[in-house]
Image (cartoon, rainbow, N blue to C red; front, side):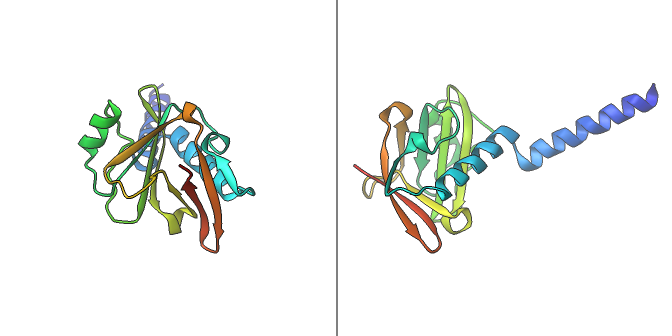
Length: 152
């Protein structure tokens, strides 16, 4: 009996360590599926809803260095799946459904293999887009990846 308790405890500790180190597996899968969908676009324009393989209500994008607390104030809830970008040129997209982060994309476009611009100009701060807005992007295929440009 003692051996079973030790094995169950070890499995539990390993699962917790996995979640702490790698994050929520659903968010990781959504991030991977989203990247795959973008990298396989073959059209000149595309709607965001066509390449988002998960349910979402609002997607947010924030300027570099926006503090986590400010992000949480804007989206209306706290989450361990939110971090601030640490450098210029980093992409940050936070897809939210209800009061949960369902996908958080953060990184350099050169590492991600794609770039998405939700900004319609030179605004700084943040922007948000609702799923029902069904926005479209111009798709540019470059040697270093795909670029999605917001069509106003």
